[in-house]
Image 1 (cartoon, rainbow, N blue to C red):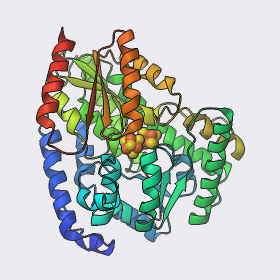
Image 2: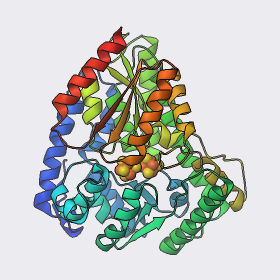
Image 3: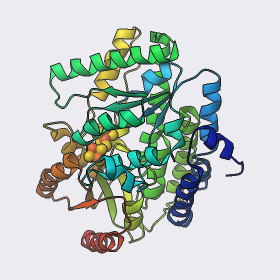
Image 4: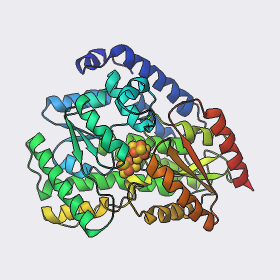
Length: 426
Ligand code: BJ8
């Protein structure tokens, strides 16, 4: 970071000492994981810059926007429609929760057997180290997994601006109606917060911006089908992670620039790893910044990740919202239609998810799938068993990996991943 942001952080109420410690860990991890990679696309420079300023310039942009009367909405789940947030002239930021920080404090309020993602946002809050959380005007939680749903009851005491949205658990017509009523309620809450009345024109504009961001990510995903892979899985994951909090227009532009460079690489048959290296799909829980452990292990063991079946990846960006409608109600329906298709493991039954994994495996010419779940995440851990069985039926090799945010199991994970990659080479 080139500027001194300490006053801004202090004004936000951060604990500067703890925050310095977090930034130190983040900076080292980034250096070791990303900057050390060979043959990266030059256009990744933008994303390196964004990461170097993740608690600096972007927070300043948010604070400047707030000073001009805009509101900042923090979210934890891809069921929260960014289109509505933008239509209310507000800014959406995905709250990351990907680091093991303050878990000791979190465990005073939560059982130890809570997933790392939940403990992480508690740890950030209790230690006052997340400037995004502190810069929000409203934080949106949702009734997805039991862990989050119940944890929000306690979190509300720490984060009084928490708003909880109900998300259905099945895919029946009544569930779709529930989602629509929740989105209408959320629309009203946003209007009340911002003083902006969301009309068809505003909503259509929001839909176009978010669709364009998705289009850029779809373009990036499609380019990864080439062998040799033109970009590492780590860099592609980073782009997907940055999508959650960067300015959407600037992000879309920067991602399209990466795609242009990758298209040139592909024409020259240039890759980040030699042709024929084992190609892996990661499927499961979202990987929030700075949870790069498993991808780093795969890619330093000779494999390359060519797709993420994850909310920080294709599950979060699949399908566009139909932009053709002109009335507010029809546009709201189009939003519901798109989001209702998200195949999160909190749904039952959830057969579409396995179908998506199979079709991604085919599209990205994958040799094997890592079914990744965070320890104590029941939805993804339980679902992994049936997905594994179905993939085996289609002769797609897979391995189940359950881990957390700690560094303690790196050696053990590396051994398992290396053995899996050996199988894929045969
Ligand atoms: S739509 S995946 S972002 S809920 S890892 S907290 S599920 S116990 S994050 Fe998610 Fe929305 Fe679904 Fe996507 Fe619970 Fe599991 Fe923890 Fe999780």
